[in-house]
Length: 295
Image (tube, rainbow, N blue to C red; front, side, top):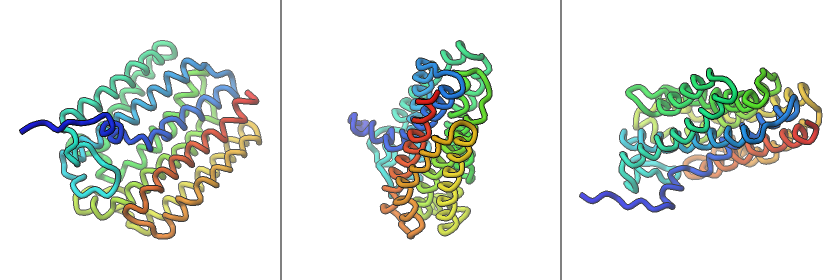
């Protein structure tokens, strides 16, 4: 049997570029906080961005591999998956995931060596969490814990960590920004899992959406958008009221929220993922802009 020929376009699709704003946003927010309270260290910010992007791509490939070999993606509604569609072998996708993890590890080691060595442990936990989201014998993504981990690692850890490597101090605005970014990153996953409730139920994947059910999952999405808005106010109270400009992100969040609360299902939820990612990036840009200017 011949191995499938995977094109660069296939690999790009498998990396799920629409999810990458969720990797850019925390680094932007964390760097803006660092610039406001102390000063930005731009080469460290760039390395943090490499770590964040590489981890996001690694998670996407790892999920593709793990869900693919379990057969979870056999009747997928969303974007193409490499293993599930047969466009790439499981081994090749697994290798791609570990290559991305390697890029993140190298950049992370440089940051740890120039900041504090205990950050190596934080990075190791991030990699383990990324792999076991859908990997291993008992993936926590199948137990309804995916949203919690996304909030922690792609929100709190990513933003606070980005600020810390530049200021080497605890900063409360970074925590508030982490909550806002984490809420919207979590909302992306909630929308994704809302779309996949029918197929995940059949596959035995007990995501939070499957556990909550369709209606309550939709309310959870709207609640997370409100949490992100409240976080803007918290950041502004701790820094400058100009940061309230970040509330303009709600303009980008209106359409996806309306779609979710309006009962959109299946393929109709795919644009919600892109819309929520755009809202998250808008949150980061609009909050960051005054902090960077006034910092």
